[in-house]
Image (tube, rainbow, N blue to C red; front, top):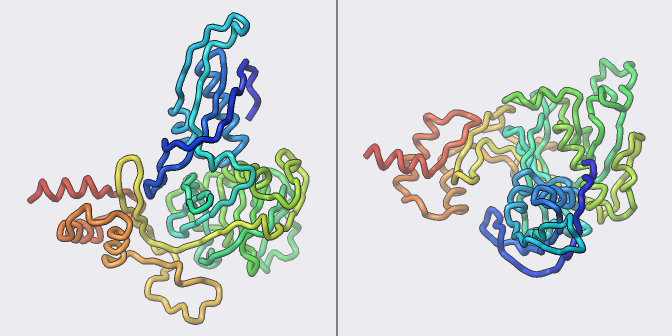
Length: 358
């Protein structure tokens, strides 16, 4: 992001504990006040967002909006600073201000999405959800608990198809299928997170057509690159890579590695600003009912399929008994029979609907 030419002064960054933000589990996050003096509230908000993205490049638009919304404004009248009209204080989650950050990158294969979390002390803080393209049926993306162990900047790409072994590698650049940055996580196979030269594929509903790697939106992989270089890798200063177009590879030291979890789950129970919801996903690899006892690539413990028992158990474990058992049974039966894939069904709406129909 280009620096803005505006008059503002960062006044203070003081460590105190506040409780403005909640995680999914409703645990309050400690915050630190960040104060800016500026000529307009728009300038103050812009300066805040520049600061936050420099500190924590992968913050979602929602996080930026939520933090901006905490502003407390004091109007100034200082003749020595005629262009400074406001002092604005924001509450920033303290975990986003750390020098060294650890994340969990979790992909759900049939959902075609990955969820990014910050691991901070005992807290797992949801950051954002990104669209992905996963492996096609003949070149599957594998489930497993991994660690990111290598990064590549401006990579070249060699088609893994044995029939194309004599075809020259695609040089680095915007036309490269790997995009401009690669995060390696699977030491046993050629599977990693990377960008793409076909961003339109990420707009499809069914996104399983890679060679097994996990494609990302180029803007997202660019943000992840900056975040890893500034906040994750501390064994060596790699911040010079941020704007570099040079082909480079770096193998992480142990302190740099971060967990990657790849699951295969054909439904999701979660919540957003509208309430608790469930979504269903296609069993794209037709894994349900398969014997994985001789499969050396996948971790079957990370596979969960759409059954009434699984849904009910997870709902009660995560959300308790806020819906009577008999009513929740009816709702789940209805969803299993009538629910469409890749749509969100809100339990509060369904509960009201079933009560109305009685």
